[in-house]
Length: 103
Image 1 (cartoon, rainbow, N blue to C red):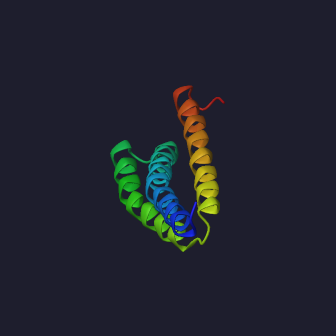
Image 2 (image 1 turned 90 degrees about the vertical axis):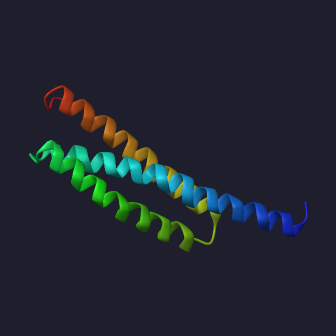
């Protein structure tokens, strides 16, 4: 495979990681923010509004960070870790809220 093609594929991989996985990671953070705000005693509508507004900030920050990385593999790895950690935290928070706080 030529060097030009490898560079093109690396760039495409970086863009996919930066855009697609960043969006998924930010949605998980939005969900986690809403669950945490609701669990802290905030009204449900206010928790939803807060997390929706913070979602724009989360996505912007994650995208800026992802495009600042030189290596696509590092971007994929760290965004994957953030996404999985947020997903697991969401599951734990949802379970705790549904069972009345018992883990």
